[in-house]
Image 1 (tube, rainbow, N blue to C red):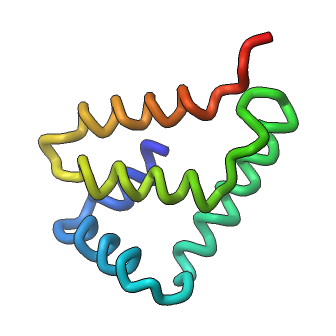
Image 2 (cartoon, rainbow, N blue to C red):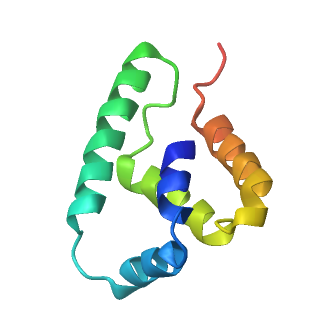
Length: 97
């Protein structure tokens, strides 16, 4: 997730471009499809291992990551972005039995 944040914020204006794509409502672009495929694979594997909840879908996680990039994607906000990623990871964790 940190690498996605790096990807989404490395270039000046990338967060704004990402916001425009999300706001446009246009069908998924290739990058979104690649991210969704990768996230699905990771989520399925982690859920099968019991590491994360099984009810988390790639589109929801992608939306959460996009939200972090948009809300805390400026260079001076990296610490906040890391805290937000920790919150997301905590919410994904499987319940302790």
